[in-house]
Each structure stands twice: as C-alpha cells, then as structure tokens.
Length: 201
Image 1 (spheres, rainbow, N blue to C red):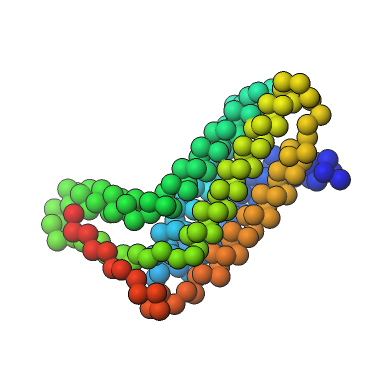
Image 2: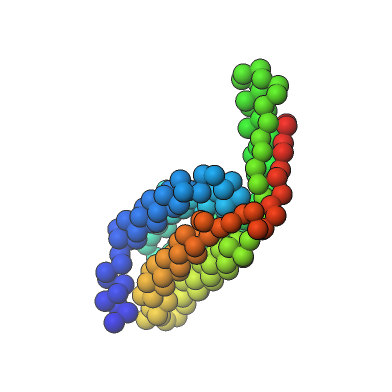
C-alpha cells in the first residue's frame, strides 16, 4: 500500500502540489492585505514556499539525487531551511523592523523624500504557535527521512517506511496549515488590542 502511494506522489506531482499550495497562499495574502499583522505571517510562509519548495527544492533534488547518502544530505539541508522559517516567525517583529528600515533607507536615498514612514500592526496569535508546531513537524519528518536514507546506505537497503509515507504525510500537514490560516483570515484584530509599530527610518 505504501509503495503504491509512493508511486502516485512522485517528484513531478510533488512540484505540482507545491505550486498549488503557493497559489492558495497568494489568494490568502490578497485577502489579508488589510490585516498587516496576519499578512506578515502569510508573507513569511509564502516566501518560504516560493524560494524553498519551488526553486531550491527541485534544484537540490536534482543535485543530490543518486545514492542514499546524497539524498540524506538533501533532507538535512531541507531541515535547516524549515528551521530558518521557524526562526523568521519567532523573530517576526525584529525581521519586519529590519526590512522596514532597509526599505525606508532605500526609498529615501532614491526619492529624496525624508518624511516617508512605515506603520504596521503587530500582535502574537495562536496561529503562529500552530505554524511553528507545523514547521517543527516538517523538521522532524526531514530528520526521519535523512536517518532512513543513512540506514539504507549503511546496512539495510529495505528501510522504506518513512520514504513511502513522506509525501502523503506532508500533504496532510500542508492542507492543515492552509486550513488554520484560512480560519484566521477574518480574525477580529480589535478584540486582541494590537500594537501599532511606527518606523520613520
């Protein structure tokens, strides 16, 4: 059964699914354009999917495909990239202050407008905790895949349980990720007393 599922979800179908999830995140980002706090979280996830899953992932897969040892390295790198996404979410405020300052300095240098400012809402929600847990699960999956490839490379070439369940599990987690984001799109920010961050550069 696992082998049948593994054959259905090959590399090509994974790329198509990743692009599909990117498309859904773009729709969500359009819906959240007025909620700058939620848009920050969605923006990080969208950037992560576009850069990592759509571009870096396929490149690494082609580069490392071959032996079990090289495939193990591929999933270790993916673990690091997912961990980086978690870091961006945990330090979201610092990230957006830094990006805003870079934007303002660039804008003022190009236009000469010294009065330009950036204002955005900021508050923590349960959504971020769930997203962090989801990406922690991604990290765990990548470690399990890397470990299984090492086992296969070292002494047991029939270790394929994680290999065949990898894509179905990730797809289910992906759908859950999108579900909880959709759930928070219409979040009433007035009840949460958000902080308004004002940056003048």
